[in-house]
Length: 131
Image (cartoon, rainbow, N blue to C red; front, side):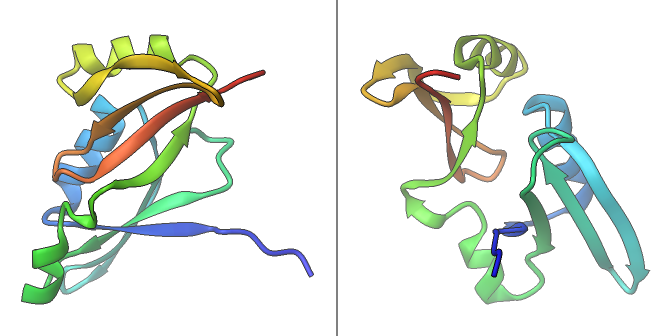
């Protein structure tokens, strides 16, 4: 049996605000944006068209969900975004106002730097050795 992770949920306060940030600042691709009425939408973004996994934006429509916006993994990295050009992506994203925690640095498994999205969720931008 073949298994894979297809989607990962990120809680958002506003669909369009999240779409704009992820596509304009992070360079993600809008994969789907379906409106089902009554404020219900299916919105997904992915790091590239070739990505097998997408992020699903889920509207924080309850107090409990709203409390978790931006802290889905507390103050730890929530997701790892793999790239073949950490330094180049860092420069592009930084020039668009993305908040980074330091500069890209070499680690035993490659080059990485942590950044956050518009809500404060932390992501690791990682270039594996050999990519």
